[in-house]
Length: 144
Image 1: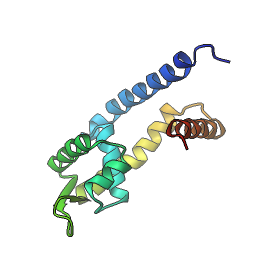
Image 2: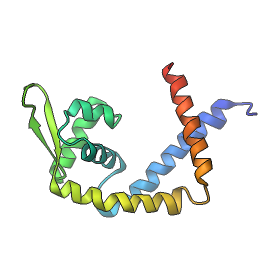
Image 3: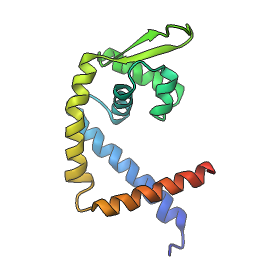
Image 4: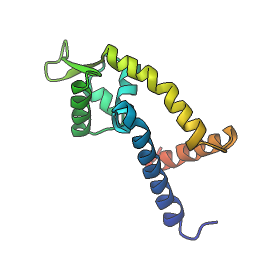
């Protein structure tokens, strides 16, 4: 179907990801949070009290990135770190009441943004096909 899969699949996917991130960055400015910070906050809200290392895995972030993001979230009083109760070399991370409040604001806001703008005119069936294709591509890449 496509002669140059790199051009049609790889580059187009990369372009779409960057466009979504740029769009979400603009939309989230009013909340003083970036898409990267939002992903971490959302994962933390669902897994309060996990270690920084576990949070990095769930948010798909490397160690330096998760440290930087958590430092920013702490400055904004959205999250807090505490020494782990059994492993002094690691930290447990908790969402603050302010973080919970922001998460509760952002969840419906972003659902509307996706529904009204990003996924406009895309059916649930099309979205499911898209999700399945991405899932298969990820499995192929990971060698599963």
